[in-house]
Image 1 (cartoon, rainbow, N blue to C red):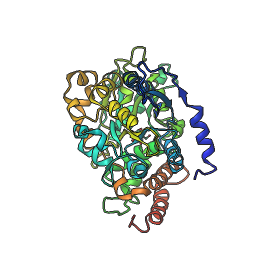
Image 2: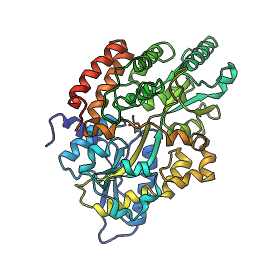
Image 3: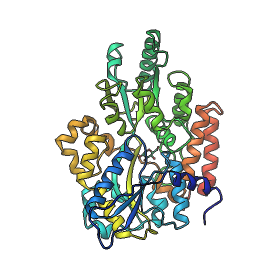
Image 4: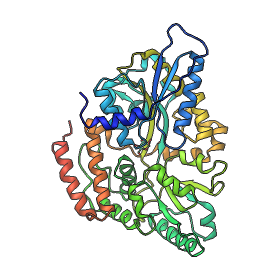
Length: 431
Ligand code: GLC
């Protein structure tokens, strides 16, 4: 049953619906109209729409493109409302790597439609998308948190590519000061995602893991987040706010940070791979001046940590055209479409063999150079926390946000977080 609060989200969704009004080139007797939810981060909408239209032309089906909110947490809330209301308004959904466990019961088993195509994808991604033995989503693109840097500015100021957070802080400060003195008042050292949403959980997990502070909740269910290494990690990040990072970073998601970096106003940025193609695009102020590396780690401890992200496509159980919707998903996630998206949009493929494709590696050198970063990226604790992951993440990003905004010390925020996670988990049992 939809909750009263769902009205605004639903209104938002329908305000965003764009009917393509496409006349299929061939009239199939069983032509259907398939609605697909494509996110609008960076070039995502353009690519999603382009491939879906190509499928519609090929099959004679019609399309309706829906753009849900860019913010992953808002998108999840919208999907949960639609799916729990058993709405048939969306046939195909873009599903975050952390959602198959949460939404799986509402999603169609794609295995009968995939006819073995799943074997081409990273086995870990397929395992992630398997909920109670059912393949509930086909992998579409992989994500890992990366450090984007201005190679021209590091060179100009004789700064090394930072390997530790301390080095990043020094480099960011030196270049920020130098560029401001030279007339760019708007220059910042480091931009990232500090808004209270899922993206902050991704950033904060990287800080914590890179300080050897654990994975929030460990694989055995133990809540580990209230520890001095995690506190140091959050404190380190809090010290950037208002110093090398603008205070506004507390409200930045992916696109806000990219906006600052791409305008030439930041030395370093944490973001997902999609930012590469845009930074290198014709007309970009920083074209040819950007490098991509692993995120730094703590000095003397920890490891270079990237949070694993990524997106899949799924078919709603409430679709009135499951076969056509599944066909669209299989087309959109195919090797040909993934290659096109990698070449022009720097979306990391989920099909293993595409990482040996010379054209893809030439367009995106980081996909080859940082291959290990993708294969060893840290998963958020979705497996162990199951249906409660979203509550865990919500509490975690709030604790991080409270520390970043100075509402609490890292120790206070983490001790409070520990207490609330104990409640959410029924003292670490989770099930
Ligand atoms: C990207 C990632 C996703 C993550 C989200 C956070 O969309 O693919 O896994 O949850 O960013 O903002």
